[in-house]
Image 1: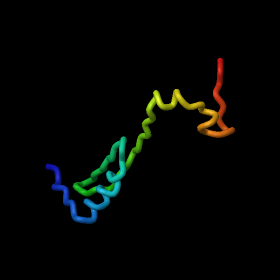
Image 2: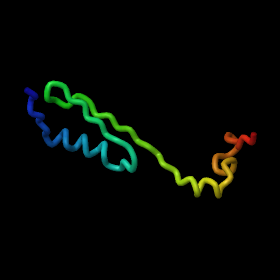
Image 3: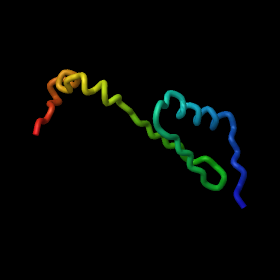
Image 4: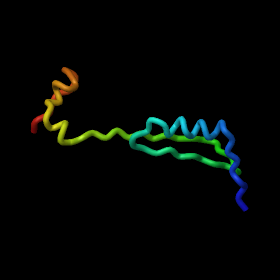
Length: 70
């Protein structure tokens, strides 16, 4: 039988800290023997494709990035 998970205020604050400010992504909570042992945060950045077509990538990123024409 699974052990009941005990969440105290400290763990709730840690989890909330990982979720706060996350626009796109996920928070994975790993539990062993009824105890939280790890929190992983994966953040995604999404960009509007129509907005990027209007700007020249070389101007946006400076001299380090050049558009490849093929």
